[in-house]
Image (tube, rainbow, N blue to C red; front, side, top):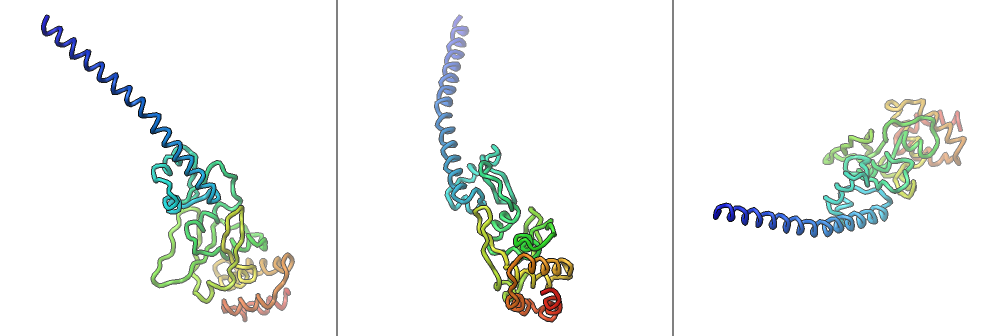
Amino acid sequence: MFFSSLLYRISYNNRNKKRDHSTNVDKAMPRKNSHNRNAAERATDTFRKHGGIMRTSEALAAGINAWTLYAMRDRGEIEALSRGVYRLGTVDLISKPDIVSVLKRVPSGVICLISALQLHDITLQIPHSVYLAVEFSHSRRDPSIDHPPTKIFRFTPAAFNPGQETMTIDGFKIKVYSPEKTIADCFKHRNKIGLDVALEALKMYRERKKVRVDKLLEYARVCRVEKVMKPYLEAIL
């Protein structure tokens, strides 16, 4: 009897301890969930202030905890556009997500060649990659972008800086070369993209843009293709 009574008391006490522990956990959970919801709401507001797209480094610098960021991703509240670039799921889709995500990854880059032609609406080509210019440097490696497909072109400082413009797409400011600089670049890289692409761009430029022969010749000299371009300028323009 003594041992039976002792075992009963031990079992009773253990059940009470488990019940108390369960109660304490239940009381703590709402506070944790509430904290997570508040953190996610603050993160959502931060994303909206940045146009709905942020790099991981931007999010962390803005005060978004890494665990909050990854939890939002796992819940489908944000989606990855590229490695380390996220878009808030509740914002409207942007028209050029690949270009925006690439420039988020490489803020110093400039949209060039066929991608720039498309932005200026002077090509019939549909680029299957984002064409991005970066400034050439012996001490700096080319950026590595696994997605979206990106073609990197290294421009010398003399060719990289002239002709840059800022264009706004869906609230995002992006750097792109002007139509005239882009055409000169296309002639310079004609062996890589095709002379037909450069000639098509020059023809559509004449039809759709205000022709600035002085700028075309200026950038032809910058790109060292003045002798190549002049006969086509005289024939088309």
